[in-house]
Length: 172
Image (tube, rainbow, N blue to C red; front, side, top):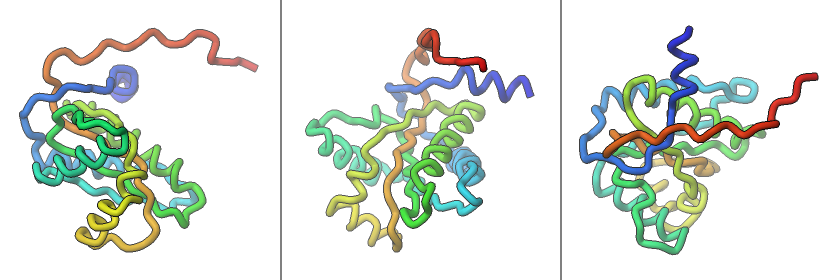
């Protein structure tokens, strides 16, 4: 139990990745942890799109950057992207998607893989290029992009934790 607790305290978002690929089996294990995230009424409204194809990773990066109005790589050179989509018909879909993203990042850390939550999945998937991708991937239904979980191995040191904000715990 102590190892799981330490994992929660030591996970950090990484924003610079080496070109070392994450093995498919490791990505599958990370995604499986995402699939086990809690969800409202056990509905499991999340869909996980694991992308390791370099051209598709580049396309998603370009689409994400376009939302920000830049041409910088918002995926920081990560070789793998797991996009979490959630079914909008579930009342708790955004919360469920956020929990799934958290499970992905914590599982990645437990398996020695670095990660970061990259936003703008909603804007990417709601746009015309996202519609083309949904069709190409055979995704039907009313899914909203919740986040891109980028995965890889840090190029350099993993950042240290920032000091925790004081005064944000109330004991009653």
